[in-house]
Length: 233
Image (cartoon, rainbow, N blue to C red):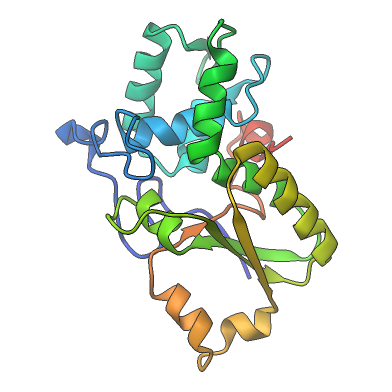
């Protein structure tokens, strides 16, 4: 099985953030936690603030892949956050890198972001390269709202892992992410055979409903950014 990311801006079932050429990409409501100006902004901030490390740089290319937001929208959102003094942008042609800026409200802002949108990047960083994990996704109410679809409020995050990982590794990670994000996570581990079984009602329901695929097996790299795109440390 492979778990490559979909084209930035799309989801596996076809929901797409608005085309940035229409200026709607920066104003799509952040339904998961509507204090953010847009869904794109919330995803970018979550990727950068999930562990609030001012020394860690991210390429804008990797932000597009990890947040599943279209490049023009990422560039526009980053430019506004740089102007607001929350991010620092460094250019090393042809790449551009961004990191968070140390400021007196950093811890408070990081806590708000992590407890609302941080579950996805934190789980991805922990599951990335974990032995036995072939696929991972989020489903249920949290995933529906993350995907920009109105629905019931999410009281917990439903996590599905396909493969044969050591359950103790998974539960240890879940405990850690729950502590950091203050969010209840409900994990289920399925073998690849059960996941692929056409007659399995549980898996068919998930496959046919909005879900968010986690990037756990690596990303396509580019010559100047091969390390950055795959670094989840």
